[in-house]
Length: 196
Image: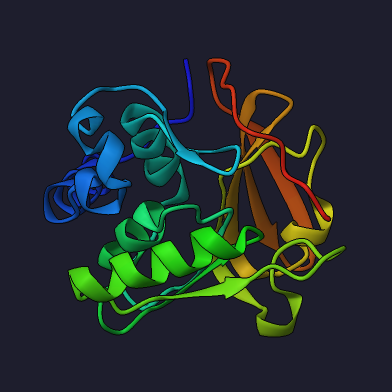
């Protein structure tokens, strides 16, 4: 049995999905695939993740109104928009992406959707956005192959990170300077998290 999410958290995630159509964050050539529960290639070796996987990650992350949230590997901006819905007007959501073309694409899609969140360019050799830390929640949508401790270190006390680690969805909670790690059920496949 996996990590349990509350009914309230699941309801908030469903509401975010209803308010944030996936098609709005896909390139025109693949928008017709938006309703399928599968990853969709969006160019530059990046994918828009499978909706059921994104929903599970968001349930585990449990974003609340007013949270500061970091979206690592923001891609087309869809997860950033979902996080912004969950964090609400009182929250702050920052995406970070290494592909300049995807940064431009995501920024344009967020503007068009009226979403108040921003996407920053990833800095070569740096994981996450340590200059903007700490964060209440961190979502990592790429697999580093091992625990991305430099990203987890960007959590505020009481904060949480959800990341795939060697194919296993991993929840990391920060309590009084110590990281506590739990693993969810199932295996997942993500593009690799790169530092270059």
